[in-house]
Length: 209
Image 1 (tube, rainbow, N blue to C red):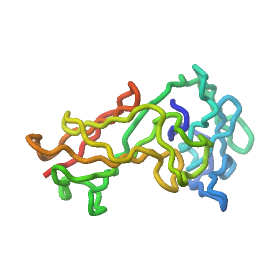
Image 2: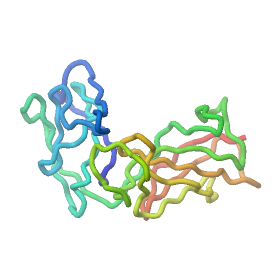
Image 3: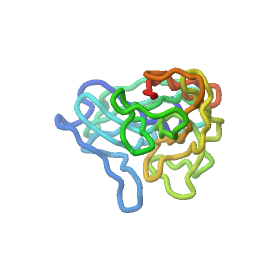
Image 4: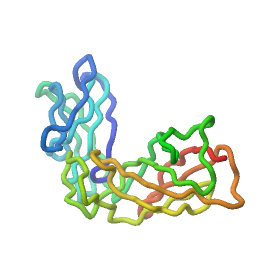
């Protein structure tokens, strides 16, 4: 895991039978306790996005920075429900499937984007930023950028990155606005590949026309 990364924990007895969604409070912070469910990294409570019997969605606290391993413990109603140790890395990027076309539509086979157009990607796992790095805090101006360099390829060709920083109003979400390469590249389904530092995210398919 990387500092500030969004992760999903699966198991049993992790939270309430019915799912509960976290929400930002009036100060723009996400709570660390949700419907009795809690996750701690080296004893530090993690911001909670979602809690349900078999699934917890949380943000890895920035406090794991500098550690080689973090001890993760899940609790429900104050009782331990599971634990494990995870390696800590500088970056562990992953792209979300919701790529946005210039007109705001979701990129898909029926709504491909043109060569040379600007599309928006969302990711997590970029690690430390040049901002305050406060766990559970929604991004506000000036929006932080990752400390590690960010690059993106589409169909194996470098894309021009116009913005790579925290998604406005979101917690732990990296937004990348990039211009799709033009010229002699294939159309149809192609692979987009995000790299943060030396860590490469799993490839994501986008559609070009």
